[in-house]
Length: 337
Ligand code: ATP
Ligand code: MG
Image 1 (tube, protein in one colour):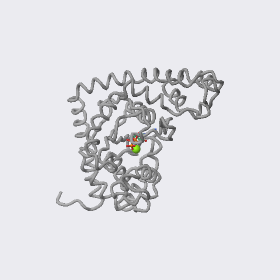
Image 2: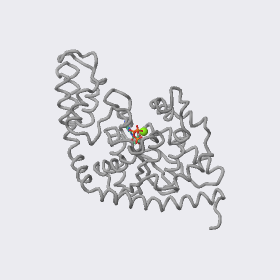
Image 3: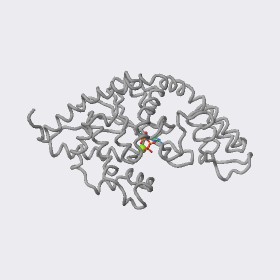
Image 4: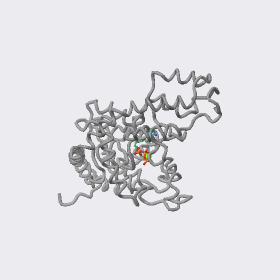
């Protein structure tokens, strides 16, 4: 029985938003307190697959994301934070695994399909401009996980098809080269998919519908004031359906003690949308305050952030090197050692 190891990742395509916090980071915080190795990858190579034309954006967000994660309570003494591109062994594994997956299978991956559709300006109306790198990012994700013998992957439900792809690669590898790799399992949080301000099923960094943990008061106010509510409610005293209202939805996240009142008042027309939004703004700002205070500390101590990343990357690389050595032996491509 392999020891439990947790591996998770986040793409440096923007700051951490509420979707990440409630969908993933909260679970990471719980898991880092268990006595289990925990690796958090800042997936810059994966971020480049659909941001190859904006390298400065990816670069800037590596540090930003690390600061956000630390501000949320990710503790570098318990969680090994590392930068993907600084572990070339992951790229090596990606090349090896690319023989174990068909192009047709990658095209069928529901997450790849959904993301291709969202990125029409990059990949064309019918995906005819899709790159080899983007189509293959699930393969690189399998390399991320197996490089560290990840047995458990805490993630949102958009990652499930990618994990399934990883498990298939692991099975194929083990069938051909002998039992070597472990099939990872997902750890889903209770909030597997947090919706966006626009009512979209997913709040996403790249979707323009997110509240970021770094948003200031003015931005939070503007975003919540513009959030989607029940379109049938025209006047302040009209009864409405909270289940289709994003303001109620976020009250449930940051205002748990009060949410039943919000719900019943909304249903019987005793709650105007503007007042309801103002209450949410106040709760949201209170929720963000301690996180932003910690963010400010790290923004003033960037040398600490860089040291955390450097140390985490060095540690992670040691393990990835051992894995590649084993894999090369299994694949009979170990020479002169
Ligand atoms: P991008 O649009 O650039 O892909 P993203 O917002 O999807 O950004 P990722 O870095 O791809 O963020 O995802 C990091 C982790 O956060 C993953 O485990 C993902 O499942 C989870 N996650 C992202 N968005 C949400 C959401 N809205 N609800 C729950 N979990 C989420
Ligand atoms: Mg994503």
